[in-house]
Length: 312
Image (cartoon, rainbow, N blue to C red; front, side):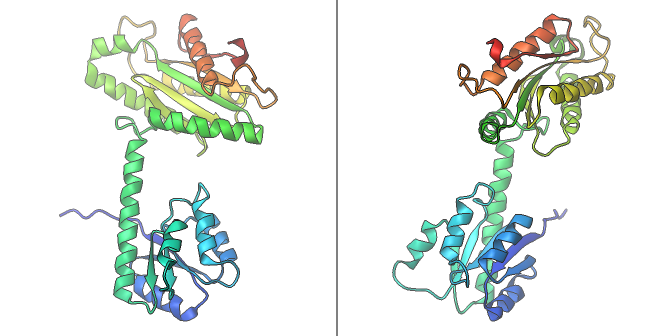
């Protein structure tokens, strides 16, 4: 039987009682890497440095109460999905409701039973790993491994809000494989799928920043979201990617205009200094990029074209 490797879980214990910390470390050291914080301030610093896979949180802390800490973590987009288990000696009426009201996944009562602690922690780690895998599958194109159209749509809304709030430029590009139907008709659908995969891989590797998004938009079409990227920066990047696809030297169909497979690109940019009162539609930048893509195709393909949102 082939064993699959599992990433080591990062577990953060937030408790100012050294005896509890020692007991938890002993119970959990075979499950994951353990980190400790004795107060909320230190815990927030450690969470910012590296998001843990699970947090064990004492209700009573010397600076901020555990319930408030949990509520703060659950209200932040970056930490809302981290499972939090309370460690507590509270058993009074209504405490259980308070724990779940602030978003905790579970709680463990003192005195601690090492077997129970390990079992509950492992259960929640497994559950949240499964959820993350399902979410990743739901947001990934199965053929290319790039983000899918759903992810593009969701991320665009987030990045548009961020661009407006931070007064930063945002560029969106649409990319199409030139004369792909001729390629499919000549080489067949299996070769066609391989062609899409090769181009997707090259496009994905061409984006160096973690904040950039490359997505398969549908069929042989792809899309980029480039946060904090002005028109000049976007054109430089996209022109480089245009050449990288041509240099893959993928033979095209004999009937195609070019001997090798090429792409056409259209893009548009939201400029922070403009308010776009007449273009409040979140998809205005995408529509402008789509018009620019059409322009690239009309002008001979294998080129990058820009269109301003203001022209619509």
